[in-house]
Length: 490
Image (tube, rainbow, N blue to C red; front, side, top):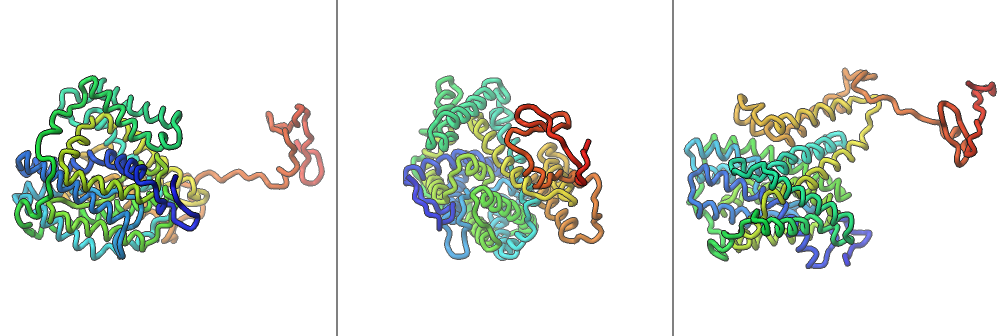
């Protein structure tokens, strides 16, 4: 049984320790693929050995666990105390590859991350002030864009995760993803409250077992490597600091601040709790402090994971302590690589089937927020339409900005940051600086809402209905309609 009172915030609900760790492990499964992808990509580009790449992965799990505990539990000035999972940000991958390709090596990457994150730590409180420019028309766009932007990730997982693999896109892979999705639906429909809330985790376990039975899951590498290992500080040598690398990484940090702000607002909306500029600032400071410390333990920039926001919406578990338990699981995985290898054996199509539900739920949450927006006699319709479409451009066509400078690509190759920037700017233009905005915005305004006066409804009785322009009573007899002056109406 959960323990909560009316005086506590929804996210402060405390669960039994077993349930907390079950839900926390579900969060880890949801984001595991995302947290290990950056070290795999960057390590390979830097020419590191398999052992060194494994060290990068372990380090990212360890730091992700520390960052998650800091973000959820919180200390003074650090941590939003919201159910947010932290992990290695994918937004920095392109810039890190550019730094590695420029000859700086992995040490220059660590130096750039450390310096840029310290700059981000300084500006975080000022950045949090943009909460005033995040009314529902903006937050709804951002939350919707988060879900839509993540949908290709789920699709890639469902296809197999590795485009170079011969089985990529096979019927078997898509079928396994479909089985996972179907299992989620069945458990959500037929299970009791506990089973329904754990439907994502249980469906992944069931689908993985099926995959293992038919030879689609490989656990042969679980026993390879050490069972336990503590991340060694500066295992790749001391960081180096290059001005150009730091400047490019600062741009990445701004993107991360934008995306984490959006995630904080989104999870606040889903949890039904108050999120103000102070809380956002605390969350951003936790983000940046974790990112600044990460290079010491051979890891990279940290940010909130949007896919786990979807998991909060799907399960209805808003407790930050459940997510903190997930952070502890990440810490253990970082200290026990053998457990990490077990989780890594979950087939990508299983993650894809679960991701369809998770990411779609995020988009649906954004649509629910947009439903509260006033569209009558405003330009809010064009704000929503333009911002979402603008955010989807890099999602639909990854090469759209390929001819632009690297710093521009870093910002606008993210559908989330693209949509957020456009929504904020258009809201400023049309709703804050109103000069020049027409009173009747023509085709960009939603059609006026039809209104029936209350006194008309008060004249109706139970069973009355309208058919072909006539008002009929429950027996089908026509009721005479009179004009306001007492004359019979037509």
